[in-house]
Image (cartoon, rainbow, N blue to C red; front, side, top):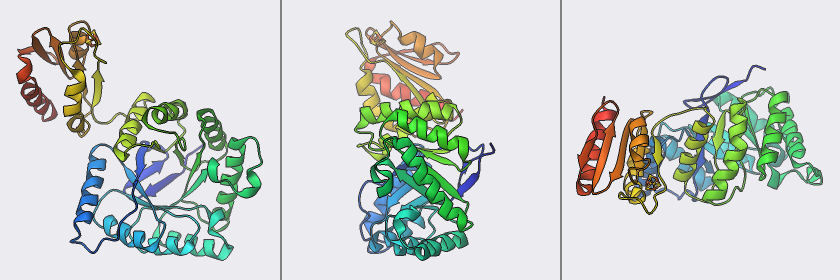
Length: 355
Ligand code: SF4
């Protein structure tokens, strides 16, 4: 089946385009007093940081008119495609479309009367803004809640919403069906992908805090991505947006769907360690995740596995008794004192990035 392509700002979704990573802003947008409001610059800075670590698309909850104005200001300040997430009130969707937003997420079923949906769809079409239908197992339409097979209920809900948009001759559609059980997410999305060609936004809903969230999303998303199902992902975590983006990067890399930026190999540390890998990564992770070049970086605690891993990486650092070794491909390792490790690593890293 040929997969549809949908343009979301500067990001192409679907077809043979790379799978994009998105996250969602976690706080209410404040009412910015204007372009000179320092909170606006702060928000733009955070968006830039998300972009630097690999976020392609950013979504905002839009519960009121204040947040629309704020989103509009932000949209004019960033190249990141911003998405408005709207429930219930079609007037909010209409107003959002006056700003340079890249996509709206609405469910026609909770917008109400047909004429309201028509108004939103007409304006989205005029502005060339795609719509994501976001079906969530936790907020299914009343009449579908009694269906025991939740994956099937989600597909029925998605089919209904798609039918409304298609009747209005609107086809720039992205669909998500989010459930809590990885096996259900797999089933719903596989089934949907066998019937529809619209790009799928993948994710596990209410996946929990960092560890459970990453594990559940990995279990569901890696097999789907390996089957070429999924155009964009959002790893929902009860954690930071940055954690969601980094988890998304790792999941795409595990699935062989996309490998951008630095890949970190590091040992868990044990009683043999003569180099503190945890402390080193606490100091360096932020910098390493902003590297755009696809390089492997090994951070190892001792000579048991350290030299082996470090030699296979583009750059490696490992403890070696009273010394630290820094490896670069095809070069003799540099033997230095632990106190000089950060400086020497920094110089070696910059030289690889600029090669
Ligand atoms: S590399 Fe060394 S310090 Fe790290 S886990 Fe292996 S044995 Fe332990």
